[in-house]
Image 1 (tube, rainbow over the protein chains, first blue to last red):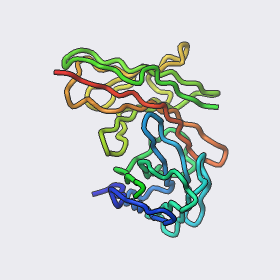
Image 2: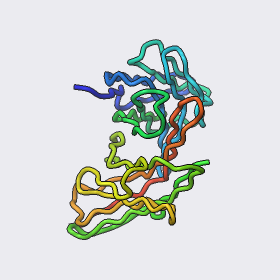
Image 3: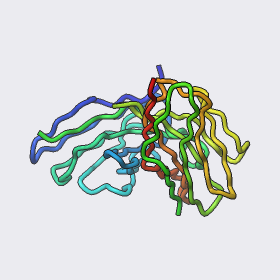
Length: 116
Length: 116
């Protein structure tokens, strides 16, 4: 079954702790994205990656880090430097980098992160 | 720069009555536009997309949207609301950078409430 799998569905972070959110896809899409969603706001871009071993900061990258060692995987680490991490985090993919804006992005079901 | 304004944060309708969710966009070139739907604690599901073909776009679940360049609008409609349509709806414009990176710019969302 093709799709995007985000895990865990719910995650709790203690003060001073780093946590990692997983995003795995079997759609064979080149580009992957991480978004943050807060109540009453649209999605904001944290990081994106167009190819393996390359990624770029989005609009709100401070306090976050990513890696792209495999095409299928794009984990997001929320570091202790992110002072307000409580939010809903969404991973998305796009078929082929460089094909232009026509194609939609495909989304996972998200991870909800809360502070303990 | 691209931007999106969703004119209503909440819309309430009765089951069986028409739905209208309003969206205005700003784009420096011919845009790609999308409507996504999000159910609670879920990811975003694509409803429909406009990519410079027909100006009246039909989507899933009976939704459609009309691209009006003169009004810079892309309103979402459905002739008859169903209880299962209750969700958050996002209007999205695609921005495209020289590097081939597709960036989505999200509206702040419209929550659709459907009463029996």
